[in-house]
Amino acid sequence: MHVTHLSLADFRSYRRAEIELGPGVTVFVGPNGQGKTNLVEAVGYLATLGSHRVASDGPLVRSGAERAVVRAAVVEGERQQLVELELNPGRANRARINRSTQVRPRDALGIVRTVLFAPEDLSLVKGDPGERRRFLDELLTALAPRLAGVRADYDRVLKQRNTLLKSAAMARRHGSRSGGGRGVDLSTLDVWDQHLARTGAELLARRLELVAALQPLADEAYEQLAPGGGPVGLEYRSTADAAEPAEGDAPEAGAVDSVPGGGAEVPSAQVLLDRLTAALGAARPREVERGVTLVGPHRDELLLRLGALPAKGYASHGESWSLALALRLASYALLRQDGPEPVLVLDDVFAELDARRRERLAGLVAPGEQVLVTAAVAEDVPAVLAGRRFEVADGRVAAAGDDRGGGGRAAAESASGRADAGGAAPHPASPQRKEPDEDPRTGDGPVHGG
Image (tube, rainbow, N blue to C red; front, side, top):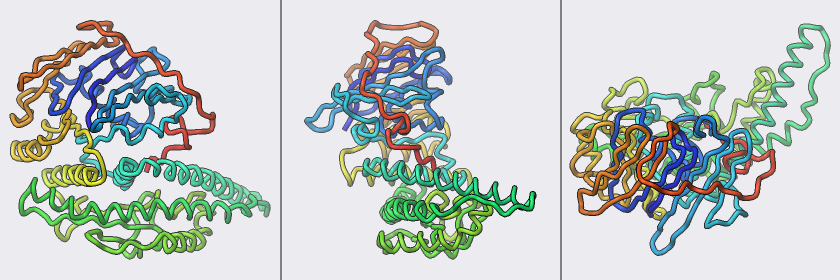
């Protein structure tokens, strides 16, 4: 699978952009702040309905514009598709697939599949548990787009349950201060518990299966990047059977749902449902007191190990980078096993690596069907990734020729109004709007941000 054409309208710094792409390696080179990452960020948005740089769509719309449009022509084998997303901050996003308007944005998931390597990847190792949960959930959605609906359902139920718990906690504190005995009716909490356990069990089961599948792939990828530096261990720790963690902390080491991967048996969905139901019941007094849901996939942790030690807090900077890259390479291998080969995106990642890791990473990704690379300095890109090159500067994207004898074309106009070669701006999408209570990005409900 690869993208053959990318069109942008009012996306980030671009008033418009028309970029012809193709299989093989394409490198975007230019000084920082000129819009290189904006181009690959748009490709990633088509794959995930989100940005790897910001949590909301607002910053993706060019200053002064009401909406942004991202469109791509995609080839998978003999099949060609056209996918278009319209970003409307504060309102429902819209989508078109092959010019059909009767689709939701989440229906576009799976048409474009990407694996992104970026400086932000270091947070997979050094960051909070939410970063690792997000990594798992985005990969799950790439493997099975229908799980976007499961994630949205879980987040919607979680929001409703937290609202009820927060009201109960506030009423309890107010009643304690005033000496009154009135409180919030919690009779509906049992219903929300059932919904949360049902959707949470499905999400938890898929995460556990994913960790088991990733374990050997991550270990193999790390060995390729840093021979002799492993082994890598992935361990999923669930709150379903853990003692109460502190706010924002990972579950305790004694969590029964701790699954080390590497072929470990994953509990059935019914077993996980029973565990979550029981855990929610046991945690209810603490939840009512604190006004927040303490049990569920939204509080779980993916523990990363190098050898016998946790990577977070013990791994060096170089080891952390190798582990983050190994997780991305494992994702790439898993997606290739499951379906069409994803587009590989390396966003300014070579500037973060030493020469040895640059060469090894480049050698592993170079055979990919389509590889998109950004770099501030051309010399940062290893020679094995020679290919089409675009120069990005002063709001312009200009083809610099093809080291392999091919060619590429681009037309772009930045917010400053500068442009290079001509090219029509993409037409805004006009699909049917979704109901106002739907999530503006997926059409299902609040996106589970992990």
